Image 1 (spheres, rainbow over the protein chains, first blue to last red):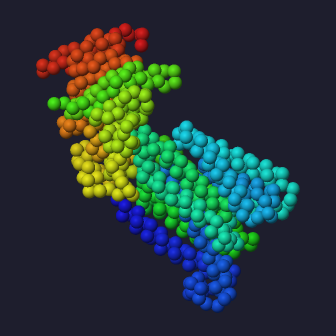
Image 2: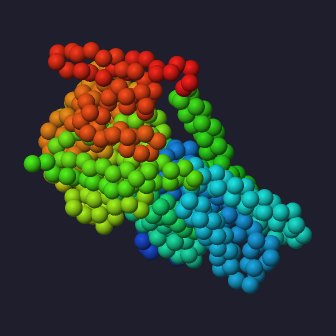
Image 3: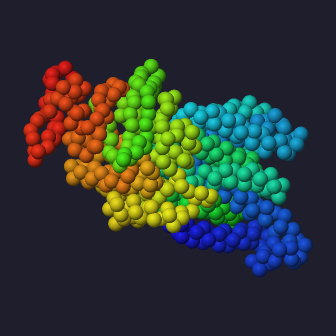
Length: 330
Length: 263
């Protein structure tokens, strides 16, 4: 039963490795593939090593980490809400993170310390999570979705308010670019900041896996099987908030990864919510590393923001899924 | 000797202002089918939910000599299998994966299935004749096949008590009989089977004992013949049965309304 899942994960890991090597070789300076691999290991001339290890490697690793966090978050949320159209953005975490970042940029907190930008984004996601937890403690999955939609709208409105009130053109530009979502010019500091939170979040989400499988039979039956539904909701909400919050903090709003990846993987690993978790993490990493490499490969000037590209590809995909779902139900 | 597997005294359940169950006292014995009957809203499902530990009434439900509340969730789930109404499956999971969920209360660590689990799953599927479509997605099955898969899921737990909430609802006569015969054979293996039913003919025929509920209270309990008298059917359901002896038995067939127009 679990054989296809491991096979798919193994193939995705190979794909991830290839994607990373490919992404390392793409950039403004042309470096042959063999030199890239050697430079990544710290071997070769100083300039090449610096370009590969200081500029490209953090960006590629960050793309993989953010992609994995978003992919597993999407699969987990879909399992909890039992809806293949659920997306991390649905519960308002992405929008709240954006609001936190907007707040920090607007009030110039970033000039006090660069750490205050991600800290503010995470604080906002945490606040959003606490509200969602309170809702989850008394409501159904549908209530949770609707509360998330409301929170998302509120966060977007408040972000618009911040933009509206922004008198400083420099802060405004910085803010708008942040909200578009990008992995450009990121360092190992960003990776070190997001990785602990993303890992903690992923661990919580993986722990909820067996319960997500039982939830496929409905809340009542899951409870009769010994599942603590409230605990599962808490695990998933905190897990996704940590992972998505950390991702938004370092990369801005990058949408639809959590929607597209689990959907594509269902063909290969089946519909089991539990079996989808690990492949969705690896698949998300592959997707974002490839997408980010694609953005650089296109060479459009100014460089396309990753969030713009995932949005342009993801939104029609989302619409197609909605149409297919409604046709399937009618 | 029959063993009392599950007993409850004075179950009272209030939802908001409504009293859904009012001092219900009952017992279920190992190896027996206890049919729970009553009109819509009589409290049949609520009773099963209380017995399964899904609704808390504050009363004592005794399970194998211990209070239900003293068991943790996993232990309770190993002792009581609950087959909910409606047969919900939210994803197109493979039949085998659905049946395997019946082993959820037994899982340990990372949830790998042990040889005992696999044997229980195979056994449940062969009992319900569902092994043929073990690899098919549950969404591709007919209503009758799906009902049997859900029953297999409940049987895979191998609990000494099985609560089944209207397992024959929306099934054709053949599948209704098939499910009831399955429950009969499950009881024959020493399981205490509690089943809510709307079909009084089936309930009277397959149950060892009946519990008749009316607006949250026990209207009668005992053998089907003693519970489903014409007077009670008139008082509780407002129907008159068609009475005729068939092969020395008297099947209950609701036939007409006591007072056409009032209900």
